[in-house]
Image 1 (cartoon, one colour):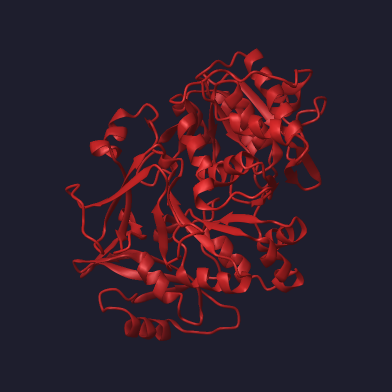
Image 2 (image 1 turned 60 degrees about the horizontal axis):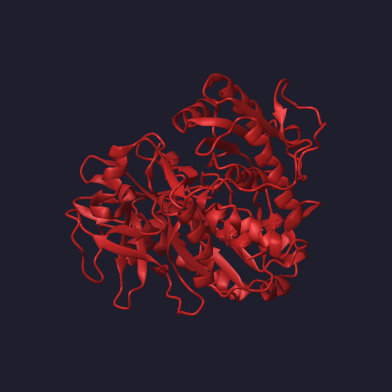
Length: 521
């Protein structure tokens, strides 16, 4: 018997009165949170959800996400979190492909009508039998008698109405699927990575080996919980560590700094663009930055490569060491991480975490030497059991017992690992391999450059040409000719960008990654 929900049950038993969740004016203790998840589990069992069923979940970072997530697990079902930006056609695909039997969906707003899009999709999928609507209010949990904004839809409050607040979690095995996380589908239709209870539980507990456990940490969670980074590294790890989770449904540098100041945040995790946004926020000085710096004991970066210049500047401003790590949905997600007890090296993602092995291999799956680049391959307790209903894709990714990531890395003489780039992002200019991340790192050392994204564009003579999209720092001025000339002085002839396009902003995913696919189109 092993159920991921034991993380919550253990903390609720040990620190029942401690605040588990803060969201707006709402504060829920561990006892209240656990009781609410028990009511959801009872409601799902009554609705006919059985062990091994899949239940989808579309929700922002509000208490209802956490309540539904652990309630689904306790009922013995697998949680299938969905990106809140999906459109109806895409939701239909996920509900169908994942064989969802029920669907929890947040109400949303006119600008983000999650509920209406989700309900329309639900009606098109015959196999999905139940739709549960969650309100937008960061409440604990929905009022049972509150009317549904979608006629005919059952609300979360209705599901929980009159249900007991105690529940014995359904006995699941370590190898049973706990979560199905869909990949972004950059190389085809999205695939569901099946992550087991053991995958997810051990990954949440890796926090013990990355930074020392405190008596009472306070996390600021603004990473989307539907994504593996926020879900494991903060929600599951935070609840395992009996921390208080401060939820911010939508990131802005102002809101993040406000909560860091007001809630005495000790742990923050984000993608590099979040750190960049806070560093460049002109209103930052209205907050007590010294107090924020004193309280922050751990900051974590992942989801994309952290530009060395952003890391250096943030470290200087807040006097805190950013721990950069690496992982994928298929690895639960943590595979490689820096640690507080080891020297940080600029640009390095650190070392394989406890129980995980990492190889760098060439096109023939042979190990490459120190300092040489190769594809990152991973083996360990964190690797998924496979892609849902896709044995061929699973076999291709899991060659020779190792998960092949599609990412290119290198290892230095002391064992530190570095991400070079994605295989698919590599530019081949005139027969030479050009790695966009390397070009971005150099560009961001220019005093006028705030952020850069590099792609390859078609070229008749060279096959591909290097193009950079650049955001200029406030108050700085630079021309395309000047930046190209500077780049030529600082990079090899085959590397430097001949094409520069200045932008005021770059397209980003819901998780804060730069959307290079949109830049290419």
